Length: 528
Ligand SMILES: O=P(O)(O)OC[C@H]1O[C@H](O)[C@H](O)[C@@H](O)[C@@H]1O
Image 1 (cartoon, rainbow, N blue to C red):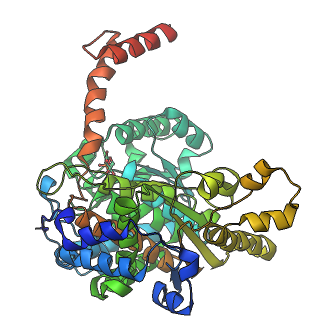
Image 2: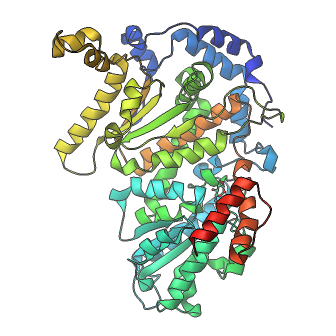
């Protein structure tokens, strides 16, 4: 059980409210002592929190807030695999997938190992005897975003199998991907925790149809379709035997499942050994998170800074800005981890929270974002805390490109911090310049950011980075007194779409609010 503490009733919350009225200049506070206190080396990683709008006094009280909200006890409950997902009556234990001491976890890993090795060494072949060259993961949400993000992040580690990802019920995606594939050498992984998800099942049936019309037949389906799920009977009903099913368990939340067999497409792309290294990296972050005091605990510190921004300074979004093309899907992956976990207004006592919970997560890889939305980050009326992420050694040998990329990574957080004064502008363009131009060229600076720099983007380091974010989200959810492991907010839309689909198919009109009704009528008119 998690504690049920309204954070706004704690002493530290009251003190933080007082502190939030005081102005803080980040740049003025930066000295060697601050660098020492707010930067951390952990293996190949360097975490730099020094450019955040956080004074020592604020940090002290944030740590106190974590204590008052019993983050430590909550962490123990999660590491013990307790039933902390109360509204779904489930345990939360994705950590066990990295820890690998549960026999069922080891059994499925072994099955994954054997399967991926057979694919790679050509023992498992398609219906015409050719080696599998392409694996298509059909899944959505947690059964897509994690495997996709990790697979592309590890692109340089791909072996001889190319992964593809179909998620959208919009057939345009499926058509685009399947048009380029050969059914003889394509294997489909139907990935769905529940095996009831509309998008995934629709895509799975269409993929089977594609396979059957392109030379495959009922007898050879088993060479080209496997499933990953917790729902064995639904998998069997679809026509995939238990032998071709990889199992995971209801104590693994969808958005925390890439470490389970849901990561099969990753293992197919990079090989089992690399998949295990991903788990090892996450395990190292788990151990750090579990055993380190708050003032040095990376996920906790990041979470606390986020709480400070969200609840006290009213900065309501967080930009994730990876300066590495391979991490281009990290923002969308983190949107699910963070927003589906903490986007809730009902607290753990069932009351409506009278304070902010989960922030808006968004972002794009640098440098692309610089030429699109950074204007607002630098000079907009909103303050957007930024998380800059970069990798020191690229996996290519275009040194000049990488140096330019990293120069931008450093320059952006520097610009946010230092800004540009009126005097500097005048010294650049002369005091004869138009007053309007002078003011427009001034940057106030003092805008917060965190920088995460690490040596190489390999499976181990990626595992560590992802687990860092998972635990950060967990700590924030504990403090906000919400249940981070359910997602009831996605249900209503799904529910309403069912009768609407029936109406569309039957060309009838059901009972809806008049705005929806008029919109649907427009659609009926337009598609005539
Ligand atoms: O893996 P599945 O059961 O198909 O679920 C796929 C996704 O759909 C749901 O709507 C949830 O919001 C997600 O948390 C989940 O990851």
